[in-house]
Image 1: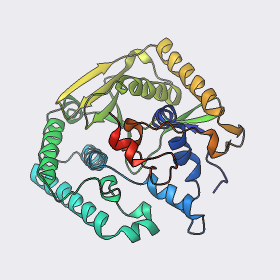
Image 2: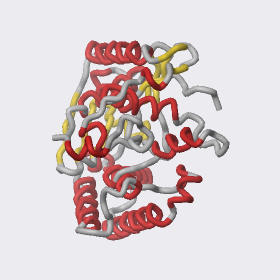
Image 3: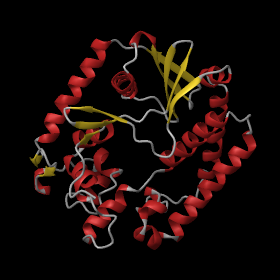
Length: 312
């Protein structure tokens, strides 16, 4: 293990830096080495807090994993067994979150802990949460089975990449590793298709992510952009959007990444070794939006519950 994190950039970490530099510090630097049982307790706690997940994130990961396995094996539709499997995985995750907190604290990578359970802001046994999860799962899978991409797959393709078992795909800009995790990439009739399976609602960030995938494909495969199609499959809505990008548009994305790296480096005291400045230089930006769902509010001295409760 290196003493400091690798020099890398991702869209999600960049958004966190913009939203709250203090949270970025916890997620990027304070947690580093926290998996070591001999690390200081605050470091171990920061590492644990990076492992918190939400119901939506957990469901999305289960659906993504199912789709990746389904595409690879090209299995026939088995709707009921998939619903039952995802339901069992959810029940197990909820049970582990409530009953195995100490085990999670010792080994957070191998246990599930829901944010809402850890911070006790929602009782997962009340209301219609289980029913809502089941209905959403049915909707996501039905729209996957009816998706244009699956129909294309069933008529014969060549798989280039598929996201399975945490394949952290990347490319380089200014000696920084740029993480861009592609859900699915395939070739058909001389064209390349890059698919992003969306299990949530549309976001203003969706198109930038597609451009990031296109830049990844262009740099790693040196393919003709005229033959590259970027597709968001919105499984929650049962819809899709298709995009194509020029080399000039991707150059704009690369320049944007360089600008964001420059900003990120302002927080470093050693750019080559990726050594951060002290925590105090990563200013907190407390607000109801930033703090309410922040993983790190337990260790952040700027967090105040009354502020959250009284903010509008």
